Length: 113
Length: 111
Image (cartoon, rainbow over all chains, first blue to last red; front, side):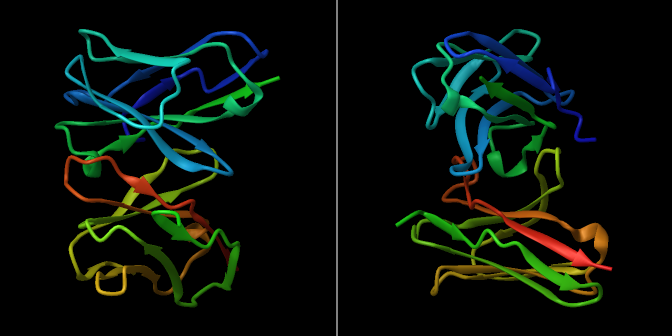
């Protein structure tokens, strides 16, 4: 167990809908990262927050947004969902801002129908 | 050309064999090289971490980096059925830079 908790584990929703994925980082970790994993694209970095502030942005669509709250948990909001958004979404956390030392959660499997 | 290329497999080898997993990359700025193991329905877990060129050994696992050829390898000795997983290579230019992942190689160790 990495100590990173993601909820829900599975989510099935219809096209056009909006969903929120939640991540609780390991105790003491200030950085949270969001990744999307699909069969054709592999693991893609979406966005990073450090102590409540956006730190880095990757291939995140404008329909997606994220935030990190004062208690350091993070939420990833996906709106106007399309079939192609079906993927595994992973959260990772680390003490500092270094991706290379991040621990991954077990992911949320999103299916858009 | 993709930044990181990795053969998706699947790769099936008998128990006890030496496994060789490889990745090539195009960005010469990469200096940090990682291997992650991902079991089915789980998140990736960091297996090996190497800075710059050279070899690093940890138990049955050896990571090699050849920056001149832009080629990295992970060797698994005395492979076990529990090693069956997807192995992702990953790399970054700086310690706090975003990580670029390969698509992963599915490995099956046959008992």
